[in-house]
Length: 331
Image 1 (cartoon, rainbow, N blue to C red):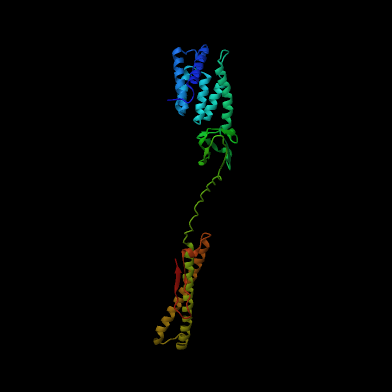
Image 2: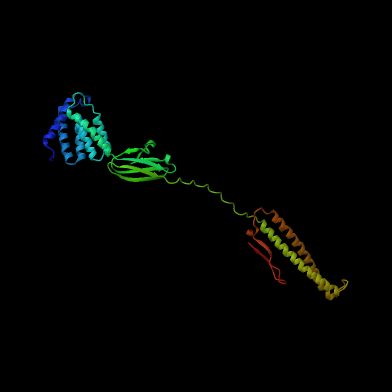
């Protein structure tokens, strides 16, 4: 694979990295480096540069990491940070630049390593300006009890309302209050400053306790029996009144025919009919009065709130004068 930069510059960079490894060989981190490992690191560094120039930043990063494990050097770490930057992993790139800045060069460090450290400071400042951030707020009832997540990672309550750095790309913000979840999907570009407000809906209304079923209407038979007795008693009184009128009419007829109660044999049947009417009238009055009294007593004994007409009623039917007496009812 061909490189766009002069070959002599690449060789000079690799030579400087190898020399730095030799100079730093006394440091504990490099104590295990051997000439073979340093040669392998130089080879990996050259291959990584070719991949970087070709735009294959993921493969270049892997090669730089292998070389850095063999002979750690600021120059390799700066290249690793730049690969991460190209891959959109700005948070990891910033961490890598900070590692370069904190790298202990020692008194015999090569100028190229000091230059790499100085360059890391400048690159980190530029990177931080380009790193997007997001500010998340939650509003609505119960917002203080909501669990907030950014890309599935739960955020502490102290982080809400403050800027959170993140890589460019797709992100998901959600707030959960009980079973209810409010979420937003975002596409964040490099350098963007986003603010997300998650609005929680109203709290669920607690379910009302179920009311005890009302007892069914009283099924006491007393009202129905009372009204039935009143109806029958009234009918008995009416019958007694009618037969009483017939008794009086019959009596007047017999007094005219017999006089002094001395009736001829041809009037004996009329006398017997008179006696039957008189007995019937008395029986109707006695039975009717007793039924009326019993019906009134039953109605007085009926439980309060009973509706007699829901159970039924019996009584004399309205009739035209002279019509036959009848009973009516409903159940």
